[in-house]
Length: 237
Image 1 (cartoon, helix red, strand yellow):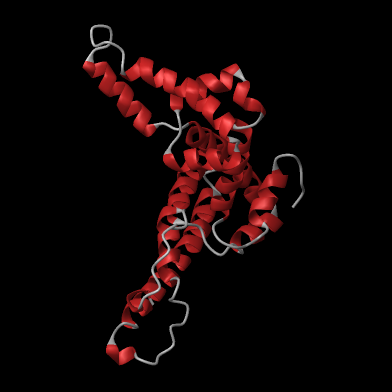
Image 2 (image 1 turned 90 degrees about the horizontal axis):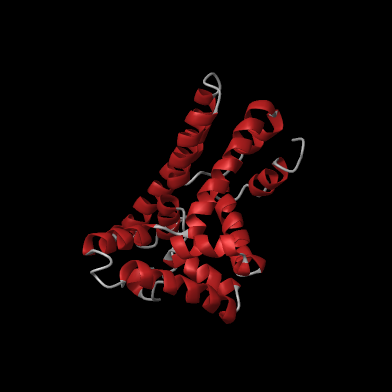
């Protein structure tokens, strides 16, 4: 595939052929965004206004805390908490409860990183659609991916339906469906095998690829690897 400033990041995402490429795309963008927020952008007024307005979800709070110094995170929180105070704790005579509840609801659903990741992913999707339509090598590379997770299957199809030529969209949608469904059936089979291994009649049988099927199924369904580590007991074989 010919490379330019737009396609180089796409190549980096799809070349590994290991896991959902769109999860890798998101992870790459998240890493860059978390580093950006806690670095030079921390003191940029325009960025601070937006981080104050949108805040962060729990996963992305954890991410910026792991990337930045405690001082950089504290400075971000200082101005964020000031805005929260004004939006939610102002005297009721100045801010009705209805407005307080609306502000609280908005904050519960907003995140600076999530919003920017979605915008950037949609931009990168456009590049994926473009090179898929024009480059044979990339179509082969796309077809060689191990799978596409369920959340990104939906997200990619929705974007492709709007952004791709109507004549080529069906072929792209079918290839994307194949990659997602094939893996879903594989994981589903491993989950079933895992469950059967707890039947006394399965004693001594091979576990196959089922031992990590729970984690793989959750990752497929959510696009995130579970962080809970099961206890080493007989019930969690």
